[in-house]
Amino acid sequence: MKKHLAIILPLALLTLLTSALAAEEEDEFFGRIYFHYFHDFTSTDADPGLYESLQGIALENPGQDNGFAFTRFYFGYDRELNENFGVRFLLDVDYDQQYSQNQAGNLGSSSRNLRPYVKNAYLTMKCRLIEGSRWYFGMVAMPFTTTPESHWGYRSLAPMGMDLAGWGSTADVGVAWKGLWSDMYELQFAAANGEGYRRPETDMMKLFELRPTVYLLEKDVTLSAFASYEPDAEGTDEDALILSGMAGYDHEFFRVGAEYSLRTLSDAVVTDPATGAVDDLNQNVISAWAHVKPLDKLAILGRYDMYDSDTDADNDGESLLIVGVDYHPTKMVRFIPNIQMQMNERDDDPATPDFDESVSRNIAFLTFEVQW
Image 1 (tube, rainbow, N blue to C red):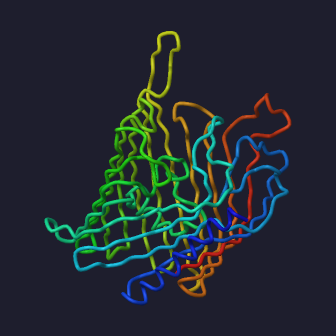
Image 2: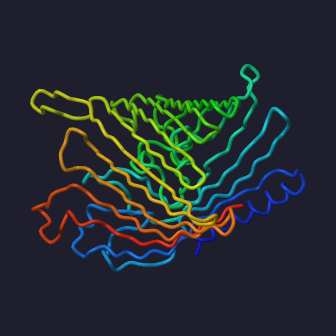
């Protein structure tokens, strides 16, 4: 009960405070809630050690789990102080898990406790030197997955592949800059701690991210690149470099997009223990998605991700397939029945003869998304 009060009371106070401010200043109070019912229909032959978490659901009893769950709350407030300055506060209630790679090489975490986090708390300032751009100071949004996630459009079902792989964070403490010109050219830059918005800084090194984007044919075509560099990433001696490219096309009746991302960790693999020789570790993520809109309030959607934790190793890949239908009676409410399947390339492990490592993990969801 105390854990629930620790979440509910701050949200209630925030709601009352920001509602009062919004009424007085006519500024924006906004929010978003993700909620779903799930039913796991994974085969009992599946190995729980390979698939630890999907949408915060641990694989403890294959084929026997179902229930209701809140997966995400966003409560935020924007206020324009004057024509040059503004502020944003955004509270994010999420599972206290980090999407990361475990010892088996797969993605996810089994932690399932909901906790509130401050995701954005920044001052924004108009940049006088470059028209059409602004500075952001504080806990800022990072360029990490902004453009691809916006094009994918279904964060309630899954974040982008780089985010799932634990390669970075969508928010961090630092300084950011963003410019948009002629609704065609966009540039985002950030320098931050590199620890994300849930952990304090632990070293002297900083993370740098850059995302240039071009919108063509009246924004029907989106071309976006991304680069990030962090020396001694995560307190190790390994420098982390990420390069990514994304392309998307929008039509009145459909949308398609794809992204390829490569991460290199310098000197992360010991190739010869006797001599101490090391080599770089290369990882990649490939994502492709599509929406078809047969009716005004109905869309059929699909996405396929392939993740390789070591491009030089065999049988270590993992993939995610999402197929669903989006019914949106209004722009603010969505009902999305969907099926998500996790699969891997691993051969049967002699150490776990009772499990079949080739069996996929399958969960059916009925996802509700509400925003205001």
